[in-house]
Image (cartoon, rainbow over all chains, first blue to last red; front, side, top):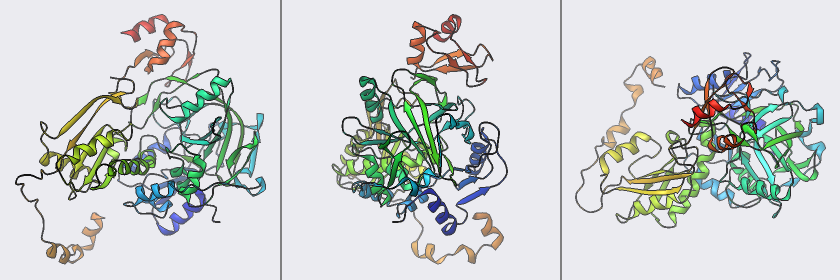
Length: 468
Length: 56
């Protein structure tokens, strides 16, 4: 067994894709500095993983944990993590998701996440280099937690990535999405008058995180194994023993109890749509134990940036593709672009058989994921990975009195500031060429000349370098 | 449109906003939850004049 973990993946990246990992040795503050450095690099249209070796913790001391950020900031890396390609990623994800693999239990002694164990008063979350990301964020937030909660009725484990505010050495507040499965689990425990045992996992192989994004109502730890392509190794927790397992090769695990008899304030926090959530009420957690590897990385996900937005994208695209294909077999590809926070817009490429199929595809897409708000359907000569090509199709192949659908009053997302609560109007544009009647031919360059011309035969080396 | 209830921090005079569920609870009992300003990080309770400002 290969025991996939974050360390193995970063080593593989550094060996096979030089330049995709940048190590920064200058000392930095966890307050804003790392997000600003990442943002400046993103403005240069680059998305490397950044590893900061000297980061201060919340006490102002140098942390022993290097910070890794932007692990998920490029589709190529997500694809690489499951031995796929950017084009194949959504479908390969679905194929793996459908083949769950049960976890294997290993002894604590073999679990790297147990290298360092702190319980009770020995726990101090302020020892961690927890990052404050945006100016109006309430404070330092854990942004990479895969939060594991066991369903009391089915015994299955639900995994979801949620933001967690670090408000004390052993105190946290977690943000719950009220329309997600975790809210149902919260109500189960609340009705029983019980706190919820919660496992917070930070730092693992990217395929672990892809698997943990599943929306299937199954034991999601088994889906993680399926997407990773090997059984996930788990080991008993410090707090609940073998009743609650933790991933054995994670970088860091926080064991906590979520209180169901009270709420605490949480936020403002910069969310995926790039607006601040207002201050609100969410469940508090009391930390019981922190365990970690001796060489642990502290993994951060940069909220509202590619690092955060792309992690969900392959799963959303795969679900949309399957749903639309059931009613429109000519679908070729679905893309949720970064320009819509990789959630709110869906581009669909298809080879239609009649002029009704694009609108059918729009309706199928809108009913497949509550976050999808606008759908644009284009022909197979448009590359949907480029916003400008899709908008060109809208500009030249659609008429607003004929090609637009609006559906009022559907379920959207609170994160969209134009929604009323979770109620949102949605719509789509058919930007495909009509099948009936004449349509002009798109301009093109002769293929033979395109293949014959090599820039290096015409430009000086210095000019070529400028173009790189 | 989203409902945002702007309030002014009594400690640093900076403005930020509350989500509707929290704001409605505070309308009933302002001492029910202590708020924390994202700018100065100080804790405070919503006061009546702030509620009035937010209602506008």
